[in-house]
Amino acid sequence: MTETLVIAGAGHAAGQVIATLKQKHFAGRILLLGEEPYLPYQRPPLSKKFLAGELPAERLHFKPKSFYDDAQIEVRLNRRVDAIERSTKCVIDADGNAIHYDKLVLALGSRVRRLPVAGADLAGVHYLRDIADVDAIRAEVGAGKRLVIVGAGYIGLEVAAVCRKLGVDVTVVEMADRVMSRVVSEPISDFYQQEHAAHGVKLMLSTGLGGFVGSQGRVTAVTTADGQSIAADFVVVGVGIQPNVELAEVAGLDVDNGIVVDDRCQTSDPDIYAVGDCTLHPNSIYGRRIRLESVHNAVEQAKTAASNICGDETHYAQVPWFWSDQYDIKLQIAGLSQGYTDVILRGDPETRNFACLYLQNGVLIAVDAVNAPRDFMQSKALIAARSVIDPEKLADSSVALKDML
Image (cartoon, rainbow, N blue to C red; front, side, top):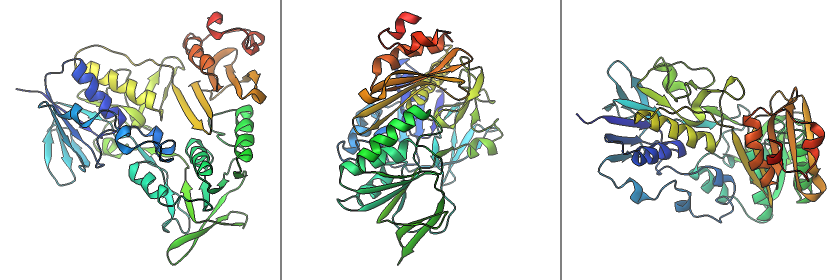
């Protein structure tokens, strides 16, 4: 009997699962169930080149349509999975159809964190997570339009950069006292604050949100917690995401701020794997379980799960990495800086080419590189090796990081 592999979710990770299965000559049937009307596509360009109108939708696709034109593969889009019945090894779709699986991969991704404030349901208040979201935002963009962005994380600042280039008047409201405070240190925040201000973005830091005010069902202003009112023709909210774990939780799988998997991407049920944003997985470099929201993690976990399904024993052990494009600046992050005890500045921010290196009790745990791709690439091996290096040497940008290994 032919083995059936069902993939619930059709994001980037799902596309990579199929690619790896094909590469490893998986002999069974592959059924992809996706809630959106699109084949697996890349999300990072949504807030960058796609929003700017520089990239057509078809260029977002992980693989072209022809990749899925295979007798072994069946793609069902606009098809949400509502339940998992582990006892019968079936998933139940939104129409009540029971679909048998021998192996199941949960590539459920994440969803935007929505604001429970007054006026949140007004027209013109947008979130950015999928193609339809960006299409709606692009319809609002125009020179002289007034945009208020709630949240100064990656998404908020990338949208600010794109919209300023398109002539939009941009104000960013952020509760924290600096931008990207959750992921970078003060030198990086200071640099980006100066860049955005130089491009005409108004940053309102240490400012809580009151709510949204509208007229005839459409947003006209954003109010702050201290009573200020900011006129707005449209709003983009970027205050983080939440992992989609409910399906796994109801099915009785282990869940803890993510679907708990081992280093083979296997859940507490040996016939069910999970990959991408929705997973909580062990990381041997940091000695703890982590949940990552990144393409790199989605791709590598997908490769790991598919390899193990094909009988090729594979263990996921990677240095996490991320990136953000804002104006002509590329921020590349290697590792996780949470818990750092010291920050080493490598290079001069005035040159717009520098890095911050994070140490935890002398051990290099992460690097933020601004327009410094060599430092980003070379830092990964140092982080993986949990290197202890003289801080003065790390600060000397004339010495290549690879020579410190």
